Length: 76
Image (tube, rainbow, N blue to C red):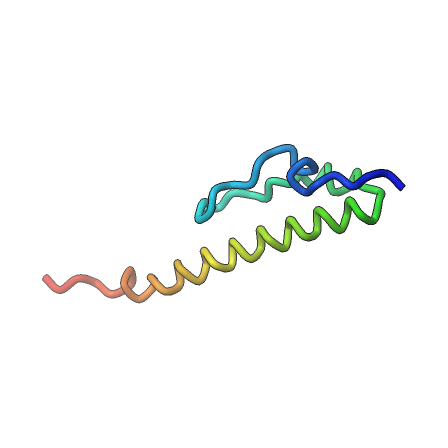
């Protein structure tokens, strides 16, 4: 079996810095995912996507914590 590339190599780009997001799509293209045929490659990409999902959930939680502050109008 061929040696498995790391998720970093599979994505073709380094992961974004911690806390960076703001609506960016995954670093892994749909075309790349569709081209994968080896189970180990698919598992590596899946792990990378799971990591991205956790980062998005963390960012969403932080935004939701700010929701009340944003929605409460300032007293004039």
